[in-house]
Length: 304
Image 1 (cartoon, rainbow, N blue to C red):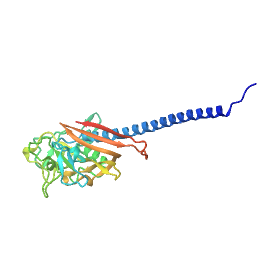
Image 2: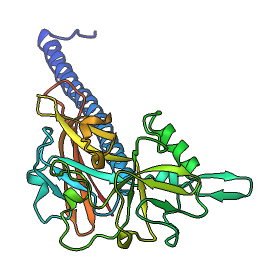
Image 3: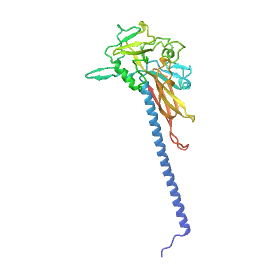
Image 4: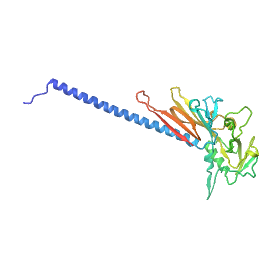
């Protein structure tokens, strides 16, 4: 005759089943938590990498020596050149520079002939304090490209929105004032000159141009400066924006330009000069609205 389970045996079995279920639920919960954390780490890493890449792509096309560090969003007079030995990462929040018009430099194909938008070289014989002449360029095409890139805001054939820079910086020059980041009232930058495109191969200076002995064969064309600005969200995080379409050589600040969001919920953005390179550091917070699972990922990028 087969005996039934006793009450004690049933209780013991239930206890064992409960223990196994408890262990199993902990394993499932931990696995789910690890999945969520891994997902958030991947998302934060991706956002950080994309933001750093966006900054680096524009920063690598900067005009040499034109970069500055600005203390804060008030755009105060506390602006220093990136060539300074000051520890910028502790005090200065905003990175800004003047960019080469590299998209317009490529030009376009015309049959079997590819003319650059601007070559970066002038005809020294015919150029003077009023006009610059180039050979083999298609400045009209460069004007059209920049017009499209700026959504119609910048037309190099009027308003003198273009800037010409000769890449020769003498010693003992105040870089900040030389490029127009900070100038005494009524004075003009000394190393960037407003121009209009007045022909296929012709720039016209206004209201001032360089002296004849300051005109060199090699030049850069610019139509915009750029600024990376971390804006406080009030909760310990920042929205990092890229400002563009402003011209310091015309007295404009980044607040006069357009902007796009690079990353939200950033916790750290700083930068420092390392020789001729610039090192960027950016940390991003996860999007989870819980204090139990958090992801804060930092990335670095060096731009030469």
